[in-house]
Image (cartoon, rainbow, N blue to C red):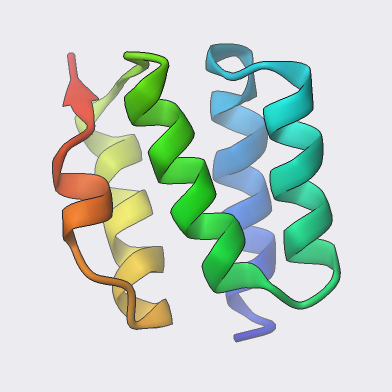
Amino acid sequence: MNALKPRFQSILKELSPKLTTTDVEQIDELANVGELAVAFENFCTQLYERDAVCSVVQVQEIGLIGTALGIKEKYWTILATE
């Protein structure tokens, strides 16, 4: 799971302009205290709730991370793409 943290933080940074500062800080804090799965779920939920539009490549990366974490795909299949 530690190998996934840098990938997750990279996509979080890439998509952070589509979230609030508070969202990003809370998600990052969860990841930093070892709650990567919870951080991932919150990340996807906030992207969805904010109607963030992601590229297909971004959603594919999110899906790869989610699959590796054992997260249900419902978290990223609902995300809007360009």
